[in-house]
Length: 384
Image (cartoon, rainbow, N blue to C red; front, top):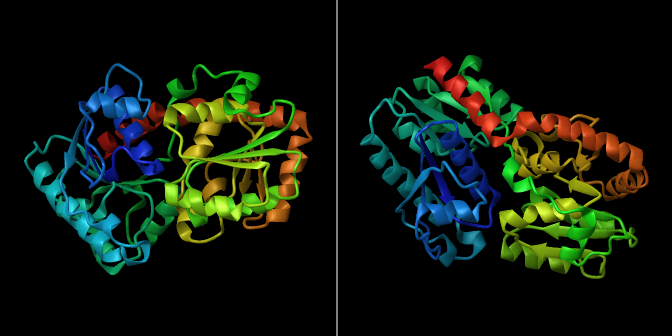
């Protein structure tokens, strides 16, 4: 099994964690697995593959191999508003170089790639799958996708929304498998008590704690959470995650709300401590763009599932795709007042939180990375 992902490894992005955990799950399923990722400027290469897997808290034992693929990387040398062309150069050179390496491999090996450009170049391979986290909108990527669909390549859709849009693009439903994200049980096996977690994070265990873990891109809606928090001074809000530039911007937006703490990026091994300290978790996605409303499969949802953390989430198809009303309290997206009301309601109802926790824990075994890998392998072998 070869996984090809244009991901910076390691990095502060959830994409890289997803790639690492998915690769590890295929290795544990008995597949000899190798991850091919991007060699990015200003990102030191790990001394060996073990160092990379340790960073992502991949359990010791059977682990994949890994190799960085060179590419032309000038993205970080220009301002964000000017990064489109450098980003496309980086993506295309990674795709070209990765495809060259994959072509040298036996055609009996399975290849799963997240990159539509790579899949288009390899579309004649008999054992190829394209994992899609969104349906591309650009003309060049749409052309690549059409080539991949026309070749009969297997398609792994991260959500029902991606599957539906692939079918609208002409893909056959039987060639698509919906594979939501998951969680690694070993990362949540030895949870501290709430009191211990609060002490570790410097939180008052006598006050309610609301936690958000994850990226801080605009569509994640974390600014809506900050607005909701302003009128809830009796609650401790903790936001963990995000790129450094986004963390700085959010701290500016949260000025005047001392009970809102923004801790920035945390190593994967620390996320469980935040979840263990929380009374409620939040997924406040905005209603646009499509990546938020229809495509995303948030890692934070499955990590909350792993520990049975009750959730308040935006009422969007992407979140209805993976959660039920027994597991989460749904609220209108981008409505800070409704979000604050739902948080207050849930914080004040211990019985409902307990029921939600039980429902989440009951669903957890079907949503591990290993369970996901087993379903994907069954799909690939059945379609072969």
